[in-house]
Amino acid sequence: MSVEFLLTSIVVVLLPGTGVLYTLAVGLGRGFRPSVAAAFGCTLGILPAAIASIVGLAAILHTSALAFQIVKYLGVAYLFYMAWSIMKDGGTLDVAEDRAPVPARRTIVNGMLLNVLNPKLSLFFMAFLPQFVPLNAQGATANLVLLAAVFMALTFVIFVGYGACAAMARDYVISRPVVMKWLKRTFAGTFGFLGLRLALSDR
Image (cartoon, rainbow, N blue to C red; front, side, top):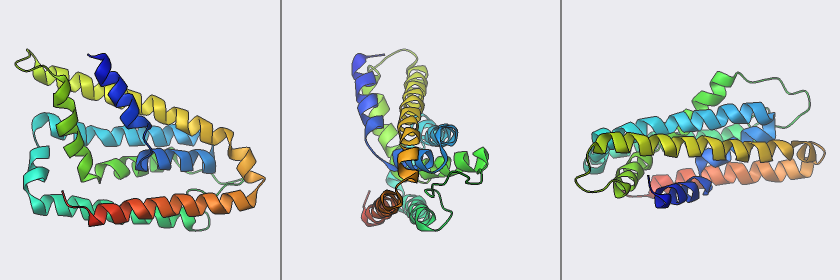
């Protein structure tokens, strides 16, 4: 495994995307432990895309316009749903001292769906992972599996870090309702923007 792969993976994971936003929102709204569940769910959501790229199923999304469009618009709908769930009262980003707990399973499933319903993730893996496997290498499939596993591990660790930072800022947010109002607008607007951008994208 090359240093280039590790550095590139870290940069890719650090870039703010739907998974990062979701983990931050959960960390701010519910605290550190739920943010770990969110990070775990987002990491699990990578698994289908990684498997698809390894066995070649991503090529189906690349060549079948219908398959791509179906998954894409499911993803768009879910991003808009996340935007709505953040803005509504009692939603993902509502912060309160005595907030009722949300089952970890629901947090994990939401994180998974954010990545599973992103068709570009499988295309990303199809383009990204093979670059770090030498041509004519023995055990190419095993190498791809290892690279995908390392990428997922990095995702989980970095997302947990994001969640921890958000959880540490939670007390500050609780004591400042105006900050919470603008955070909700920012997070909801960003999810809505990502959904709109996905809806208007081509391949």
